Amino acid sequence: MKILTILGSSRENGNSEYLVKQAMEGIEHTQLRLSDYKIHPITDMRHTDEGFSPVDDDYEAVLAEFLAHDLIIFATPIYWFGMTSHMKLFFDRWSQYMRDDRYNFKEQVRGKKAYVITTGGSNPYVTGLPLIQQFGHIFDFVGMTFEDYVIGNAVKPGEIKNDFLALDKMKAWNNTFKK
Image 1: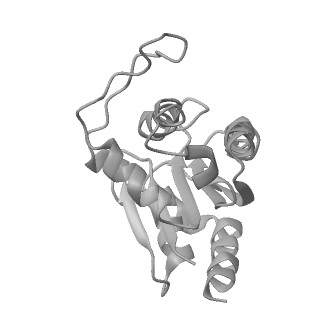
Image 2: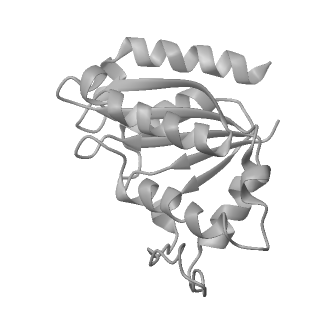
Image 3: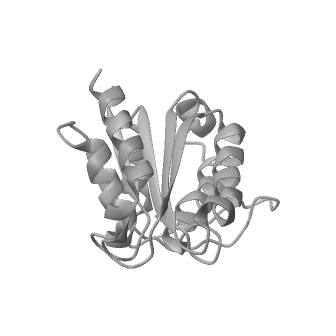
């Protein structure tokens, strides 16, 4: 099983990334940091005769990595009660590729296993639930299997090291991925 981690934070070595590192310790995987790529927003052309216009950016390289893996871990801090703009833009571009004749997007995505790691403060176990639901709806729409999620309680860098529930869950994921 090929594993891909997609980091949506604009901060390197943040709390969400720390949890990813714990989950992936000793496991072969590929990691993408969305902030390292030039990904442009698109104009919604779904309902026009001409369709979406090509975009000159790095998205197709990111998409190729995503499509080449079986298990995907999406990691994003909670920003204003949702995912980061980097992560949202990653998903927004799916609209374009679901209509691109070069891809059979939904068929290629169907059956991939999805995990979500998110971190935040101000009672994230409650305020982060709509974000988890959003991920669930996205995965359902394309036929991915939503395996599990964790919401970490941390804001400042390094605070996640005090969230023993999240850290224990990452150990459990690590054991599962090693099997």
